[in-house]
Amino acid sequence: MSSVRFFQEDVNYSLPHPRKTASWIKEVLKREKRPKAEINYIFCTDKYLARLNKDFLNHSTLTDIITFDNSNSDKSIDADIYISIERVAENATKFKNSFNDELHRVMIHGILHLLGFKDKKASEKALMRKKEDACLSLRK
Image (cartoon, rainbow, N blue to C red):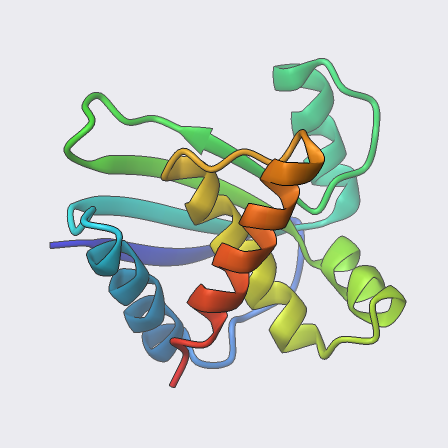
């Protein structure tokens, strides 16, 4: 059985429908044959995420998401997924997307990385976008 939890660090944000969102993510994991998962989403500021990016990944750029895979086996997923609410809001405007849709895309993007999907090459990005769209279509 999967567990999906939501937290905040350094930001005043609460996910509008946490149970519905958690059910959707669990459904994606189940369809990907990874029903055992412990996923923590931590919503934060650009500043908080930039600090993590520098400290843990030695990157000095802003990002919308950092996924830490803490899994000990291939049979289950254990992860902390940090998401900058500021970056999501800015990207939603930039891509002419609703905040909620952009947030869900970023949330599932982190899950897809945990499932082994990459996005460095153009072909990988195209597949990642296709998978994101498929996952987003499962929302109720």
